[in-house]
Amino acid sequence: MSHLEVAGLTVTAGGRRLVDDVSFSVSAGERVGVIGESGSGKSVTSLAVTGLLGGGLTASGSVLLGGTQVIGAPDRMLRPLRGPVASVLFQEPLTALDPLMRVERQIAEPIRRHLGLRGAALKDAVRRALDDVSLPDPRIARAFPHELSGGQRQRVATAIALAASPKLLIADEPTTALDVTVQDEILALLDRLVAERDMALLFISHDLAVVARMTDRVIVMRRGVAVEQGPIAEIVGAPRHPYTQGLVSSARALDSALDAPATSGEAR
Image (tube, rainbow, N blue to C red; front, side):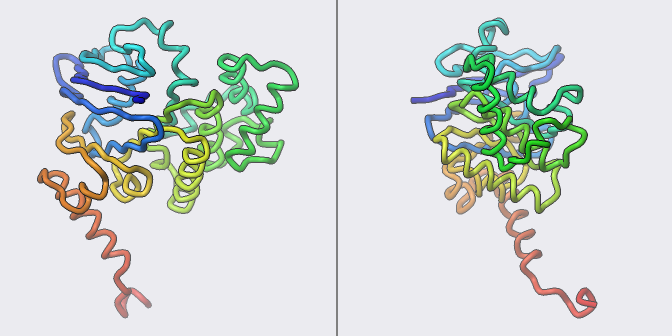
């Protein structure tokens, strides 16, 4: 069963194609990566498939999310899908979170709206949601976003994204704004939660190593076009498109540089 089926998706802005005739699917339990440089259309694609495109952007083609056609659908039809069917984890948690609302209220809202919990049951669900993202300290629940570290904010954003138990998690560059150590912690957290909940994952990133770690299949985008897609092992092992070959070569060169021993001058 496919949670997401995209066929011929095209997104335009002022006559310019930001996404050009892209097709792919994400089945139950599948992990799919979308990789590309800035401006490749990968994040626009993630917004289009959930009906979250901003003003001035027009989508055409077909996007079936949980069997519902997203293209052309009014927002009132799509709101019930955002949470139980698919949920988005955005790149920058500080802007994704409401700065004027305590953490516990932000987590409680999707639980109340989609699962119908109230009172003590709702409070218990919020506590469990924070426990699931390794934030058991009750002070976190009472905090405002600006009072938390970057890693804590992304964990809170993850708790909100998973609050309504989505079948598909769309993670749009979820670690880009974090330092390297925290990035690794968040990736490990996402890997664990996706596995435990048997969710499908659509993971957007510019980092091939991260995509290889988190996904089984990858779509390579350049200038709005999906230039290559397939199992991650095949894409990394035998890339066909010149752009993909460049991505793989760059990733291997960086890996070699990091593994290389320091010179005597560098050691000093």
